Each structure stands twice: as C-alpha cells, then as structure tokens.
Image (tube, rainbow, N blue to C red; front, side, top):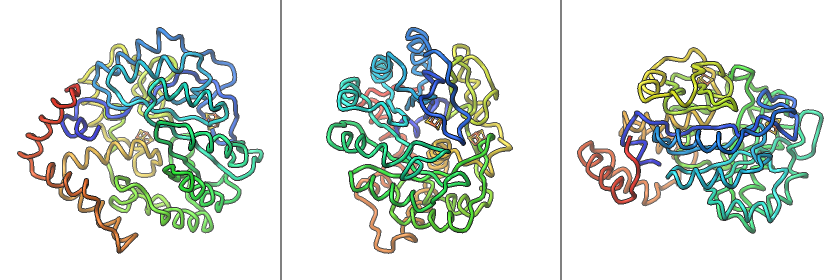
Length: 355
Ligand code: SF4
Ligand code: SF4
C-alpha cells in the first residue's frame, strides 16, 4: 500500500463503498443509515469493485449502514482481494459469531474495524463494550485479519472515561485501538468539553500507531483543542466515498460533491478533485481522509514528514526508538533516486498494479 501510494498520485489510496445503507442499530448521532434500503445487488457491487480496481485503488473498505447485513459479503470481499486491493470492513460487530469470523477468514479479509461508543448501552448508542465484549473475545481467538477498535468522544458521549477503558480492553486482547471525535452533519468538529479533552489526551498517551496523524504537525492536538488544521484534503481523488447509488462523493459527510457515477469516473477526475481546496478542511475530523493525506505529504515532502512524525512520537515518549523497519524505510525512500529505483523494484516484485 505504502509503495503504491509513493509511486503515483493518480489513483485512489482508499475507497469506502456502501453495500447497504440499512443498519440494525440507530445511533443518535448517525446520518449514514436507514431502516428500509435493500442490499446493493451482488452483480452491481462486483462491477463497482472492478471499476475501483481499474482506477488502481489500493484499499477498499466496506462500510454502511451495516455491511454485515449484505447476504453476499464474503463474495464481495473475495472480489476485492482477487482484484489486488486490500479488503477492510467497518462494522458495529453485532452480527459477529465464531462462524461469521471463520467465513471472513476464508474470504480473505485483511482488516476489520469496530466502533464501540460506551461501556453500557444508553439512548444514544447500543455499541457498548458490555454488548460486544464476547464478540471481541471470539475475534481475539479466531480472526486471521487485523482488528482495530475505535472509541469516540464528543457531546453525545455521556462518560468520556469509557473511551479509555475501551482502548485498554482492545489492547489487552491484542487489537489496535483508536479514538475519534464525533462530528456534525458536515464532518466538522464539535469542540470537546474540558473533561472530554482530558480523556482524549490520556487516550493518546496509551500509544498510537507510528504512522498516524497523531504524530504529525500537531494535527490531533488541534482537533482535541477545537483549533483549525492547515492541510490539503485530497478527497475525490486519493479518497473516494461510493454510496449505494454508485456515485462518487468526497466523503460520508460531503455527499453530493462531486456526485458523479463511479462508472464514468476517470483519472482526470481523480487529479482534478484531489487538487481542489475544500472549505471544510480546517475543522474536519474524518480521520481516514487525514491518513491518506499524510501519505501524500510523505510522498511530496518525505524528509520533513518523517522527521515530524518521529519528533511527535518522541515528544509523547522520550524513550521511543524508531523500529528497524522505519530506519530501512527512511533509507529507501528519503532520497528521490533511491526511492524511484526501489519503488519500481518492489512494484515489480509484488506484481502491484501501476496507475
Ligand atoms: S451502527 Fe454505525 S451505521 Fe449503524 S446507526 Fe450506528 S453509527 Fe450509524
Ligand atoms: S475536508 Fe475532506 S474529508 Fe473532511 S469533510 Fe471536507 S471533504 Fe470530507
């Protein structure tokens, strides 16, 4: 994924696609579900996956609604894998059983993300650790794919300390954990109250993945403090959101822009939309789009970006030593001629698609 992102700026790094808008929950803050939609027909889904693959998409994420409600989920995941893309799934986890987990293993799922909002269900959210802990244990025992547990903070979350308990439980089970901040209907930050901000800071000290915006340019600190960020959102290009109608949107919270059918979307559209400044960027909390932007920052300014990431990591943990893989990566990619040479080599060795 990293090598492909470095090789070209003309393909999507990540596309989120909706196999069904329907959800089996009704979280109070959510604007991404309904209770009536039918699943997108399998043939239509496969055509859309093929089109994303033709555009050179590196990661295809199934989201929703609740994607595990789709009757052909495993076939869709298999198609993503056979197209050469990385297959990931965002789910509320309610339908996970040992059999379902084994089926996801067989389909070749790469990563799964579950959001857990609180310890016990309330009127806003039933995505609770008490409801989902058994599923997490099944995942810890049986999943052959990576698992990330995402907890949230924001006005609708009654007890901010829940996020820390959820993060600790995730790590205890061997999963990655992240925390997000609830946004309004335009993807915009709703500033945190003092107790939420304190919980956010403590969560960040639990430790985060090295390649995260948490260590880049004070991005996460600004979000936590309600301050704007200066970054370039490349949604519509490096990140795509494909709705159940098969239209391309910037992200789940900016639907209708550009609102073009995926089947007619071209490399020229990708380049144009990625380059467009987005007025909603300064207070945006859509972290998966931030992550794709970070890869592009790395591509365009490798030295400064890697130095920024490592400095932030050391500020959080003075004993931090960069893993050997990161040192190798720095040597391979920081010098442009070496980057081109080894990038080409790796693309050929892994038979990655060039775009
Ligand atoms: S589970 Fe996810 S998609 Fe369903 S209502 Fe809650 S936040 Fe929305
Ligand atoms: S900045 Fe980009 S990702 Fe964020 S809300 Fe706007 S279009 Fe969506």
